[in-house]
Each structure stands twice: as structure tokens, then as C-alpha cells.
Length: 153
Image (cartoon, rainbow, N blue to C red):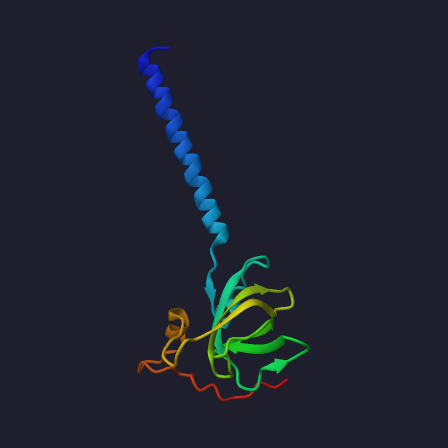
């Protein structure tokens, strides 16, 4: 093999190696990505059953039901749709009805979101950007921030 052929083989091997590394990197990133969903997004097109997602919305007034130990069930809504949520653990101090939250977890085959983590908004003005956009009316105000209605059991 001539020096030129050796150089071309080395460059070819380098290109193949870089391509393989990029493919593996992008695959790993894609598998670990968590998309933000609102209850309306889930109602329109449910994510894959094994996908871990972030769900954002407002806790519906009257929907928080405490169970045995640290079990809590509540409903999250975005003015258009609602989604029941089950969580077992300590809720944040800022968690309350009418509060904006973001929960990480999975949607079961029964349509119930099982949360692994629940985060409450930091202050009165903060809300996830995607949720704030859906809840804002043409005047720039949150259209259902009060969320006073009670969900019937």
C-alpha cells in the first residue's frame, strides 16, 4: 500500500468513527429527552406508554385527595382538558389548589399520570412558558388562573 492509500484509509476510518460516535450520541440524547405536555396535548395525542414526560398545568380546585401515607391524587388542567395525577411522596410547600405545577412521570394505560416528581411554581408570576402561552388570553392575562370550579368525583 502506498502512502497515499494509507492516508486515504486513515481518513476514511476517521470519518466512519466520527459518524458512528455522532449516531450513538444523538441516539442517547433522543432517548433521554423529556418533552413538556399540557393536558390538552395528552388528550390530542397521548405520548408513548413507556415515555417519561413533563406534565404542566393548574391543580383543579377540590381535586386534591390524600390517601394512605404519602399518596396523593389530584387533577391537573389547562382550561381545555384535565388529567388525573397520582403521586406518592412529599409535595412541595408551594403545592395547593389553583397552583401551577410541573410533574415528571408516565401516563398509564388507564389514562392516569403517575408522577415521580412534582414541582410547584416559585412565585405568583412564574409558570412554564408553554403553559403560560396556552393560558394567556388576547389581553395578556391568564384566562383561568383562578380556576375556581370543583371537579365532581
